[in-house]
Length: 316
Image 1 (cartoon, rainbow, N blue to C red):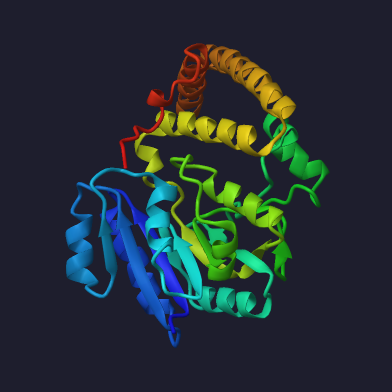
Image 2 (tube, rainbow, N blue to C red):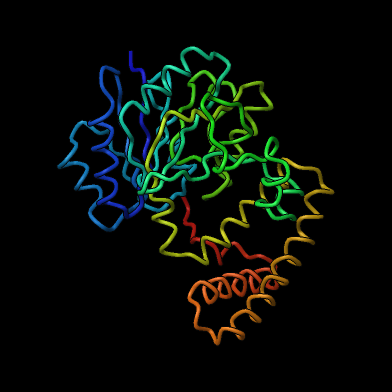
């Protein structure tokens, strides 16, 4: 019986995909596994690199960029493992990370999802857990919420020795129980990218499955390699997903409040960044990038939030 089905969605990240696959073969031992790579119509030679370098990998080649959730679902529906490990192509496993996840999931039968501690290249911690989006998290500054309410809003600055139950985990590397998938269903394909794993965790929670952060399972994460190519479109796509999450999972009042107050917050940030750039004579790259971000988001809202300004979608 297959213990773990690894699923990696790839879009034009050939070189780091090779590193990701190598890390599986290097660190996962004495466990029966299968590996799927779902390629979203890459043009950088990713498919040939997988076929030549890793002939045992099951490669699914899409003719379009179908999005993260849809591509994962293609493998989730045919996987043979007792557990799935959803792994970003920009992630590299550390020794024993998967072994520790598997041990935890095996001894915690109501755990539907378990996430890892994500690390930067230098070994420093990345945020690996998050709260479900709410009016509080979206209107107020998350850093302030984490400072004053650390129990309710955990952050990377908190060090955990033992696994803890959380709302949601960051989907760069997470282990999911096949039984829970059968109960809850696969990803909601209405999300093209962003918050699909958050929505999944939310649905797991509603069905009585628990979501955990396992801190001693560590994975390096290059953090959003594909998204960096289209930064402002990615920002817009995030907001498209955020509004979908609220409309689907929150009350009508919360959704309408968000649609009013979130643009106001963006416009205020736009004005503040204009002033900041004027004061510094546009010499600070970080300030210039933030100004472009808030300008694009402001225009998008003024145009009534068209999906076409996000990351381009094509029919499946």
